[in-house]
Image (cartoon, rainbow, N blue to C red; front, side):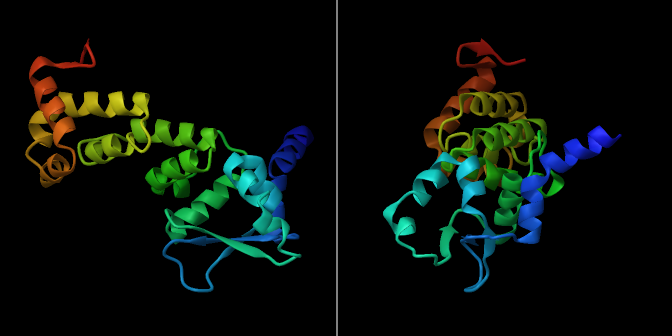
Amino acid sequence: MATLRNHAKFLNGFAKLYNDQWQVDLRLKAGDSKKDETISVHKFAMAARSEVFKKMLESDKFKASDGKIETITLFELKQEALEAFVEFIYHSCSILSEKEKKHVQSLYIAGDKYEIPHLRDLCRNELMSSLDSSNALNVLELSMIPFDKVLHDFAASFIIRNFESICKTAEFKAFVRKNPDLSVELMRSSYTKMWNGRYVD
């Protein structure tokens, strides 16, 4: 029992420092947050989790800040998604929390943009396990920012299997306007039941 308790304490060390706001030295701001609404974090935590943040924090701008706490705005994340992003940074988890699942599409994009492969992998798994007719087109579009073959093929195959119902939705009409070439591919595949040379079960 003591060993498990010590192990949990060890794994949650970063989270405790965040919760205590111990020597925070960086602020993160969401794209939709109010003027003074920021989240205080640690440079070392952000750099440890993300190669992009590491490079950013090594830039001359941050080296010349003279102790001033700088603010970085993550324009692609809304406030609640940013909170979930920070939660992920500070916790050593092999599954997404409910809060993170709620913002899985935004976190998937952030995982790619900020080079956090573990976050992107977990988000991909969640997107695939929660795929249904109401979100399949969104997930397919998401798989192209940037191109993720595993997620792309999974979502496309689902849409082909359920094309008869999905093609009747307003979402599909909007999808066709934005993605005419891909829409033609999906329509053709719905007849042949093949995607990328393989039969769709």
